[in-house]
Length: 223
Image 1: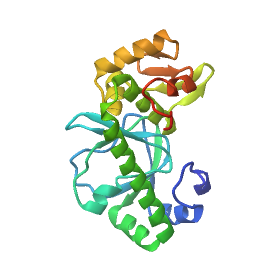
Image 2 (image 1 turned 45 degrees about the horizontal axis):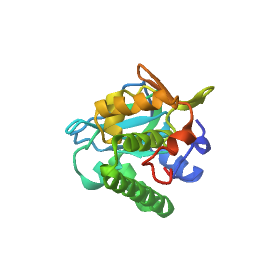
Image 3 (image 1 turned 60 degrees about the vertical axis):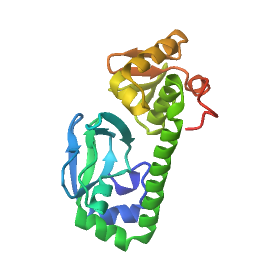
C-alpha cells in the first residue's frame, strides 16, 4: 500500500513514510488478537487497512473500534503500564509494528505529528466523558448512539438496502453502548417493527440511518 493512500491518517505522507521505514508491516487475519489485556509488551501498531476493536476482559466490555490511520497501543508505551484491553481484528488487517523506542523517538522528532496525535487523544477522552455523561439515557437512546459510533468509525459498508454492520453480536453491541444484551434485544425489536433495521446472526443492517438519528432521546442527532 502506498503511504499516501491510508484513509483518515493523522500523519502526512512524508511523516508516514518516515515512520513506516522504521517498522515492520504484517498481516493479521480476522479474529486475531494483536494485544492482550494485562500484557507488559512495549510496541505500537499503525493500522494501514481493516478494523480492530478494543475489548476489556475485566470488566467485560467492548469499548472502541479503530479504523485505518489509527495509532494503537501508544498509551501503554507512554505510561509504562500494562495493556488495558484486548485488541482484536474485526477483519483482515495490515498494520505496521513499531517498538516503543522507535515510537517515542518519532513523536519527539516530529512536532506536527505529535500535536495531531495529542488532539486525537484529547478527542477520545472527550468522547469517553460524553459517553459517561449520557449514561442516564434510556437503553434505546444509548443503543442508537452506539450504532452511530460504529457507522462513524467506518466499520461496515453501504449495501443496496442500507448500511451493513457485520460480525457484531448483541452482547458486544450492548457492551459498546453501555447496556445489557437484553436491553439491546428489546430496543432492536422495536426498531425492526418500524423497519429501521434487520438483524441476523452476527449481522445488522440499518435501512434508514437518518430516521435512526431522529429517534427520541438522541438529542440533535450529532455523532
